[in-house]
Image (cartoon, rainbow, N blue to C red; front, side, top):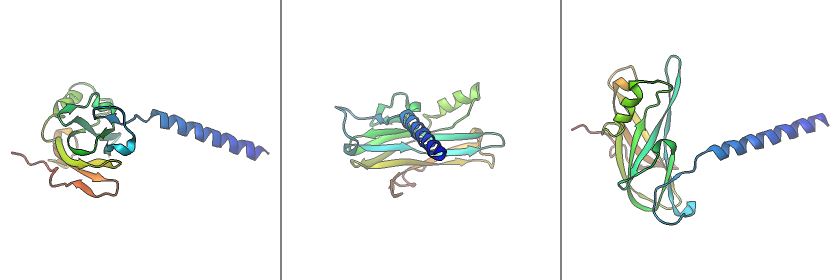
Length: 177
């Protein structure tokens, strides 16, 4: 009898924890005009996340959205995914370098750099209804020390759920002038 009660408590606790986690996940940003639509009528684009560790800390760098078809994404730092109507779109993304709790000039430097060509890119593609895409990125460094001061540029590409390239690595590669 005590085993059954203990199992029920664990199951109830697990369900409660799962519900809380599901409620805290932010909904995708609606980057289209008109009335709300069902998810199957829209395309979802997710920004990738990358774990980076140094001697003491662990950081999660992410890909954020700046604009869709020349319309800005409001509060882009709060959205890990956006939804768009099917069709051809230009989605501008940038690489957000997580600095943890650092203060001072470093966060301002990241905010300034987000609009720079070397860490942002416009991806042009045909979005299909009901599909989910993921923006991928590879940061390229000038030195063996991989920190923001040695970041040369970031290359981007877009993949579907099966890992097929929708926007190729070559199309998303940074080519300095």
